Length: 350
Image (cartoon, rainbow, N blue to C red; front, top):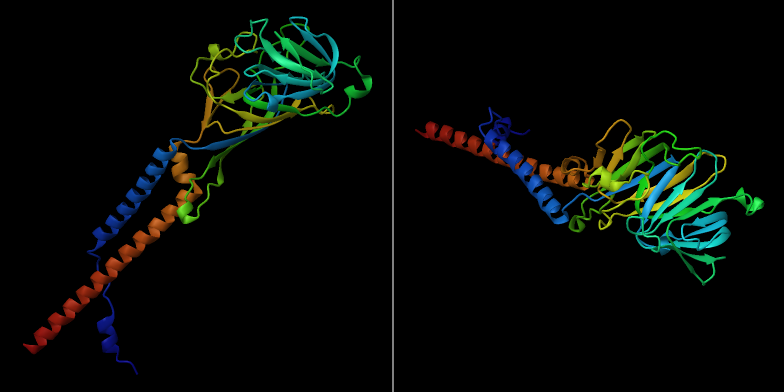
């Protein structure tokens, strides 16, 4: 049988821990290391990278073109009108918007599809090129200047009007919906956002040394209120962003903000069905009865507490700190026990 007295001699005595300062020091060290690691990563990346995905039903979506070829769309059974009378009547072919021109897709209720194109600038340059048109999708293009308006017309081709419309591409600085407003005339203006959902995600930090890849994690999911407008947040005054007609945006084109997606028509559903995404870190939601927008963004605190890769680092540092604190505790306990045993043996010899 084992000698119980010998076992007692090797067992640490867990008394009132005078080493508590070591535990607190380890905790503080872990917190400082975690904060230092996050701060170094944030200083390097300068901002939290995000991805926003919007699924909406809206009467209106507009965007400033940043890549003309990616924003090109094919039209059929549509009647065209231009402010310069460059082209009239029914057309079918490929329309390629000009760089920095503005494209507005609209549809009120179950009505016809309308497409507006504004030339670059403030929209008042009648001779500025707004788009190029190639009949039948051929190689020969015709430049179209000034404002351009297209609308589906059953008189052009009764058989193709109810056919499945081709998707309408979105590539540029986009805006979904417009502020709620009453009727301005006999013909309703497409503007109302009927419903929508926003999924806002952020990109985790990239730690290749620890095999932690920059995956996406969910930040929030929102229901877009009816009659609102969603776009990239800008510090410019609202009056400079949109003119009184609710159409042409004036300035702020120098910002490299990009949205991509598509809009299409389902004749059994009202308005336009829109699927769009952007990596713009700050979004602005303008609601009725409010002047200032609701800003949607991923802040520093969001990354600190929600980033899955940072959370793994926190756990790793906590384990290291906990093991260090436990090791120091055990060493201190054994030293105290050995010191007590040596004092007892010295007392016996005397």
